[in-house]
Length: 369
Length: 247
Figure 1 (cartoon, rainbow over the protein chains, first blue to last red):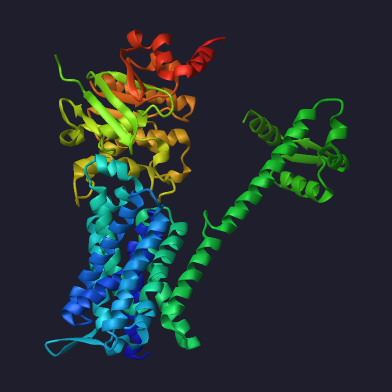
Figure 2 (cartoon, rainbow over the protein chains, first blue to last red):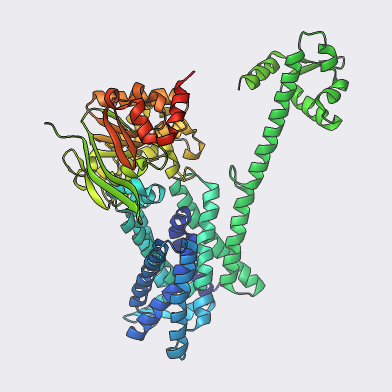
């Protein structure tokens, strides 16, 4: 593996981790679409800062973009508060306006420089190692790597410091307010982080795929764990895994790196959705199947208990007559009776079923509930 | 005259130009158990929320122990309706209870040993210490309510504002909550509950505020909780009350 490849993988990994960390809180706050809005509208901030600094690497670009992100959220809230449109419509109204202004400015005034729409939308990881940062003649590495390292460090520091505040304002903003832990300030702080991360992620994967990195790994992690810190670490780990896997997929397919990373994010979510223990659909199907069997066993036990010790008992408990009485087909009878015997609920004697003590207990419990 | 635990004066709250509360006055003495009772849409929850500054009043104010709520935040614990939070949130019971301490802990600092002890003690008081590390989505309605009450306890407040603490809980939990509220009162705390079940008002509470956009009546249960006042508060719907008390 060349050092260029290593650098690309490192950039992608840092980007994915940073996006996943802030994405967890967006997903939990049901604000995933805000990431879409912010990743687009920050373009305006970048362009405006570019006009001031005439540089595509100035740290001011990050600051300006972060501010634009916050402005976006504030505008969305402003429009929502008029109660004329709902939040989803407000998001759809605000960010295209800001983004389009950015697009117009780029196409009109910055057409000749390294700020083109394709890069903004899709990113270009493959060329990232060529744009390097030098300080005092020392090569610090690709600009994107340095930027993302700083962004990730800021994210980690903010999440560590304000972990408790972020958690509380996400779970119960009313309690946060009544305890004096300013939920609005925390929300805007989070939005600044999201914006900052989004700008950094531009270089790597472009604005559209940043959304995938911010939403898919946290959504997958949420299905896999039920403690916030574990969800957060897992989201970052999934993000990094997708970055590495996506890079190699792109290498093998000779396709867009960003596209492959985002595809891996989608695949990671699909896997979690299908196989997550507890919340996945397979686990859910298994649970429902088990409940169906449990319910059938209870029905069988109650049926036998109802007629136990009465004149009709033998007729009602005969294996070959059960089907007629319960209106179950032969296959189901065989299946349920076998399960009941395995669990020691019934015993069979000369074609007649009898409840064991355990079977009677089950019938009693089932009825009293 | 001693200072009231809660004194709401001339409180008006409107959504747009639709008044939800009109010039409401409420006075709650220290060490009492007060029920806020009224029909749907009477503004009961809004009253609690505006006391807490969650809703901005158009006029009037709420004083907690003689001073504006903003200066007395520490002294007030709020127990919202259970449905107000997402119970699928990835956390466990002890963590939710600890959240009640966040105000005392302050910004950035972490919960310490004393905070964890307070949380464990509150869990014990509510009889849910065995649920401490249970994921909150696996709780029953009654257990969720106990978690919220434990979270309010660790705030070590003087005034407890509760929004329908008995809503949708089992009989055992209801009794446990009543016991807890009485224990708090014995310790000189003041409790104000939005309450729905008219039949238990006299049994559970000392005082009652009958609310229907305006204060219909307020005072001790004996003075205020009369058929006549209920008819005033509930309008035509007081028939429902008569039937529920009837044979």
